[in-house]
Length: 233
Image 1 (cartoon, rainbow, N blue to C red):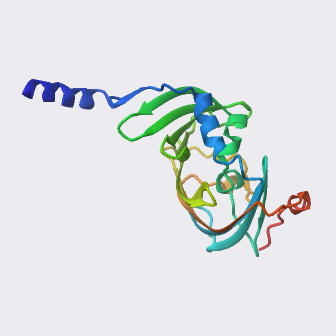
Image 2 (spheres, rainbow, N blue to C red):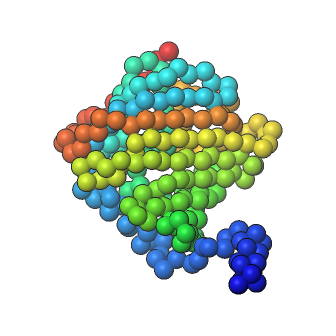
């Protein structure tokens, strides 16, 4: 018995991936399960409370309203200047399969999760790959980590709540970290607001978002998304 326990502990220490195994589901099947959570949602609005703590940027706490319409229309309405990384705050799992290709799937059997290694189909961006952790219990994205080639990294973690039969984000916490002194900026979300100069894109810091007052399938028209945000100071 002691020998068995010793071997088990040795495997965990020597092999951090012990407890993970190749998934019985393909990456495409997992993405389909995630997207099924959004299948009945044609549009929604949600109130956002945003707190920003980024180097080089001093931004007060903000409130905004986000509008979403299938398949990929997103718009924000806010008073004053709003620093909102749209691809992050407006993240919708329904767009994963169109943007990413799954390279590898591991199953964390002890946590009920899958870890997907994904690459962007658009190779013009500097984002080489993303590691996406998926909760198998309700097919939601638990976290997204995007390491950069220069040592920088973005990590986004989500908590969810049930809204009219769908699991939708309740909170989002994003952290930016770096172990390099390189000055070349990078945009881990892929779409920082145009009002932010490239020299201002953060290397370290955090953004936290609280989502509330969801309103689903209100019949939003395309006109809601035609006027672009014009940040005001």
